[in-house]
Every structure is written in structure tokens, then in C-alpha cells.
Amino acid sequence: MGQEPLNKKAYQIIKDWIVQYQLKPGSLISGKQLAESLGMSQTPVREALAILEHEHLIDSVAKKGYRIKAQGIHEIGNLYDVRIAVEVMAAEKAAISMSPRDHERLANVIDQFPDLIALDNKAQFLELEQRFHIIIMEAAGNPRLSEIGRDILARIWMVQKIVFFNSKHWGESLKQHEGIAHLLKANDSDRAAALMKQHLEWGKELILERMADKDDYMASVITGHPEVQMDFGG
Image 1 (cartoon, rainbow, N blue to C red):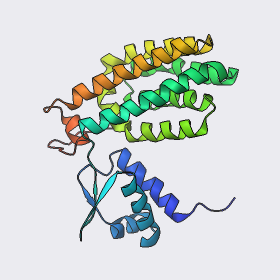
Image 2 (cartoon, rainbow, N blue to C red):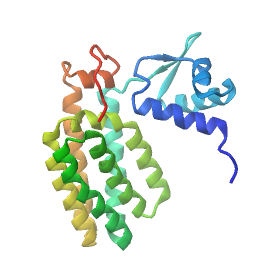
Image 3 (tube, rainbow, N blue to C red):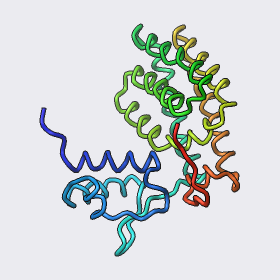
Image 4 (cartoon, one colour):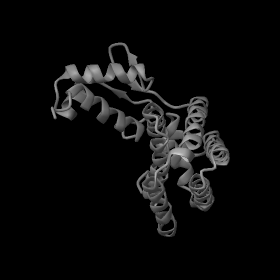
């Protein structure tokens, strides 16, 4: 297998830095600085930045480079609406097409949640929460649907974390995941899709409520107004 093209590698690394908030919303970046950080020439980096601008993750700023786009409450709401549509469809299809191995993978994820809640391990809980949803999308048997869903999950990674930073929501999240897995195992496509929709709408409501709080430090980072820096580590 040939080596990954440099522009694709640069694109993935820079995108990861953006969606994981290592590059803060509102901050300026330049192709030259990024090329130096990545140990590449500026050509593949410029190509990567062009793709990221097309994806609305950055904006071009004349004579300065690029600015990392902040995610406003309306944009997050729109992303969540698309996520709900994609994952409800995935749950409906997966209930029919999931293999025993897929069900085993879901059960393994769910089995790890209680220990993570007890340990207050935010980062690992969120990683497994996303893995749960990815397993279902992959099991739906539609690669394009899975690709779209993964991209949305990447873009709202830190936004989800502002809710799961508060562990009082973890128990309810676990209960909902268990319910979805049970309905998928029963091949109940209608109820699995309905519970998936309920689960994601619950998450959307929590996130938008917190982002609307002007005194919330973590929400201020998401929207590009980090008056107070917070530690987002696990």
C-alpha cells in the first residue's frame, strides 16, 4: 500500500486539531506556521486548508491567513438535526442487519460505562459513547451514511463534552444506551429508531441549554469567547 498523500495527512491532522479544540475558535493560523509544525512544505498544507475552508471549519482572512470558525448555538443545533436524521435511519436499518459480532461490540461498550462513571473518567466515557454510535452506523450497511455520521461526531466532539463534563447526566445516558441496544437485539426497528431519536434530542437540548448560558466558561470556548481558559482533559 502506498504512502498517504501529504495533503490528505495534513488535512486530517489540522482537522483533528480544530475539532478537538487544540486550535481555538477565533484564533488565526497561517499556512507557513502549520507547515513548520507538520514538517511539510506549504503546498500540501494549502491544499488541506482549502478543503477545510470548503467544509466551513475555517475562514480566509486577507493577508493574515485563516481564522478558526466558532460554532454558534444555531450551527450546533443544525448539526444535531442532521445527526438525528442520520442516526435514526442508522438505528432503523441496523436493527435488521446487525450481526452477532455487532451486538457483542455494543454490549462490550455498555459493560464499561459503570466503571467509568464510578471513576469519573470523562474522556473515556465520551470516547466509548461515540464508539457506541459508530458501531450502529457501521452496522446499518450504508458506508456513506456512516461517513457522514462520523464527520458530524468529530465536529461536535468537544461540544458533547461540555455536557458530559457534568456526571449527573451519565446515568441517564447509560440507561438510554442500554435501551437502544436491547431494541436492536430484538430486531425492533421502529422502537429502536424512536428511542435513538429521543436519546439524541435529549442530548441536543442539554447542549443548547448550556451553550446559551453566557456565564458558562466551557460554552464560551466553543463559541469563540474564551474569557476564562478551562482544562478539557480527562
